[in-house]
Image 1 (tube, rainbow, N blue to C red):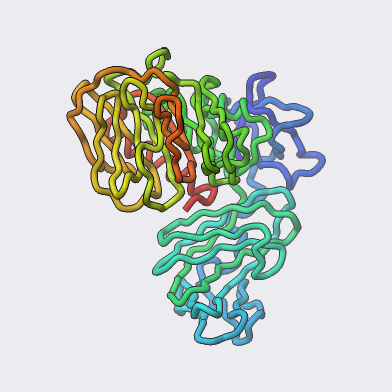
Image 2 (cartoon, helix red, strand yellow; image 1 turned 45 degrees about the horizontal axis):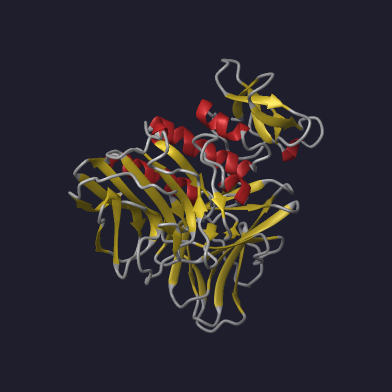
Length: 444
């Protein structure tokens, strides 16, 4: 079905109706007869292209034989059979592509020669498509291009797991998606689907965010709507002073606070990568203007959290890498010489042994004598450190504000947040929602 919408004169998501001109470029929508749908306002330009219809104009899955029920491997390389073609490149060596006879294909490189399998789908230039695949045994590369085995539109690395999601924007009427394994290990793929993004009906909170981002790409509209709707449903949306997701289509969008128009980020200087986020280029920091001691905020002395999502697995930082130390500590770090932890409006902070710096790290104070530190939604450590005072300088990301000087963070920043205390269950819900949102744009 198309996305249900309700057309309103003003205040809705800005859209451009392309039904009569370029219908294939528009997100399929239908006017909701019940009056329950995403509020939209038609504009002449700088809006999301939409096509009004009664059913979705695209089939669910554009891939032929995406479940590998039929043998996809012709005896000859570079020859299409049941929707797929395969090859080993630059030579054969011991690289192989094998079908299990039922529902999966295994790619095995040999370190010199790469094993690949590719399929083509009909596409519309300018439309974003989502790839979903189950990956077992070992990671592999996911490519998209305008010819078989190309990576001009996408070059990403999977993790091992079900429902790995990637995206690309088509530039021609035919696009190719390739799975590639160069290393000498077995990577097995199954359940491949490629579809245009489908947008859930936006609640008022998601509609407010979309209205502040006219022209946001369809993939991000879908991912952000799903994320915000989920946060609202989980009962945690109102616990944030700010929530920035930098793994998006532009730094302009990433700097905006998803929760409200308050506390936009200001980046001193940093390297921005689309769909990944920000990396400190030497002496940078991000500030959102939140000074705990001076703000009328949800973050208070005995109810507070700050968090960051790291897309870098590294070791070696010395000190706190997000937050502020000024009079007291409101800080977190994924790694401090093999430990990780937090200080939350107290005089010392605490750390515990830690391995691995990928993912979500959240420091939390739930009472005057209770501090928790969560890694990827799970409790990593806790402390009875007593609260002392609220810091008197601005909270920073990409670096910790150490009395006005940056202690540099080496971690690529996908998202950050600050607000009131989260329970253990709420910290897990927050992680799960962020994980889904970041996966939607290809963050591993």
